[in-house]
Length: 44
Length: 310
Image 1 (tube, each protein chain N blue to C red):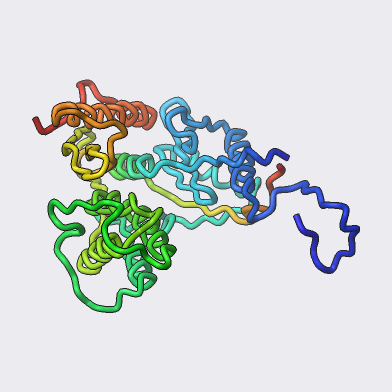
Image 2 (image 1 turned 180 degrees about the horizontal axis):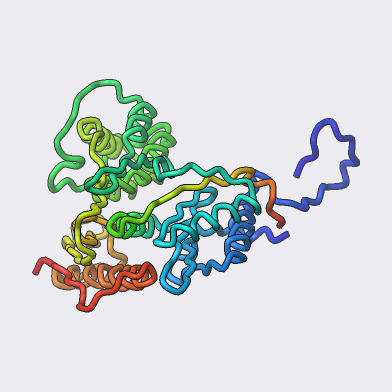
């Protein structure tokens, strides 16, 4: 187990704004998924 | 970790964790690793310009998946591919299909013929309640014109925690409120030892928000896909360290997609130098955005115009 490795990636908000704008202009359907059991599956 | 009280154990021994648990500082990392393996196994490639964005390209179509901890947004021009992807994801991990994008990371998303409207009005109400702002006074601007603050103004707050909570929340609010980043960047410089004067500046932002909590960000569906940027800087406005402030906003068509208000890291010796520093940081953002947009299949045949104040 590595105690130092704690960095997790999250998306930049600018990316999300850009993505929604492009999808909006291109008429792409935007769908949303929610993942359950967030912390039950990961191995360290 | 400390074992459960019901388990008898020798106090000289400790437990060894085999799996990530909720609340560990490594948990979020373990989670991201796990999910990216699942997504990568479905022929998605992590984008080199934003690693939490995954793209799958086929002959003529592409699917774009954006991951924010346990929230996922999926879009693209391959409608059948998206349906297949959802089925495959559901088989690999427990997922809930929330359908059309409506509520994401505390951001309310509304769709109209004009485009998507992003708002955080519920979040604004929560902040006002948390700050225990009971009076109904409103102000027209989030910060007074030419206001200058320094760390020695006023008397230290007895409990700086509330100040930090509110400022942290205001930073999150800048996702949809592009009218407050400058004011928020000013008050966030004093979180270490806030004073009564700084708290008054925070209250000013909150009173402004109370009068404008209906405002939202429109990401237009009817505009062109042209990129343009506006850059500006002041000069030596901070009375203590004489550093200048960079500001920029970048539009994709009519939609504001990127903005910033940030103190420069080096003292600029002239207003020209301060403007150049601001333009450098704007240019870096433009270059990155053009790369990102190219991956979303938005290409530009001409350079991006950047407007600045000379």
